Length: 138
Image: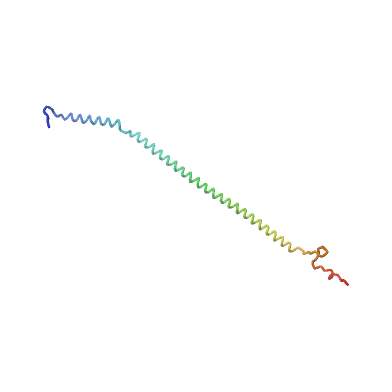
C-alpha cells in the first residue's frame, strides 16, 4: 500500500542497513573473546598436564625400582641366612665326625693294648697265672 505524499527512497534503507551492521560489529568487537589469551592458557594447561604426567611416570618408575631393590635385598638376606645354617650344619657334622672317629680310634687303640688282670694278690699279671702249675709242689 502506498500513501500519497511519501516518496520511497532506497538510500534510506541502505543507510539504515549499513548503520545497523556497524553497530552490531562494534558491539561484537567489544565482547568477543581474546583468542590470543585463550590460546596461551590452553598451551599452559597442556604443558602443566604433560609435566604432571611425567612426574607421575617418574614416581611409578621410582616405586618399581625401590620395590625390586627391596625384593632383591630379601633374596640376598635369605641366601645369607641359608648359608649360615649350612655352615653351622657342616661344622656340627664335622664335629660329630671328629668325635666319632676319635671314639673309633680310641677303641681301636684300646683293642691292641696288652690285657692285664688282677690276681688274688692284687697285683697285675697274666690272667692265666696259676701257682700250682708253674711250680712243682710235693
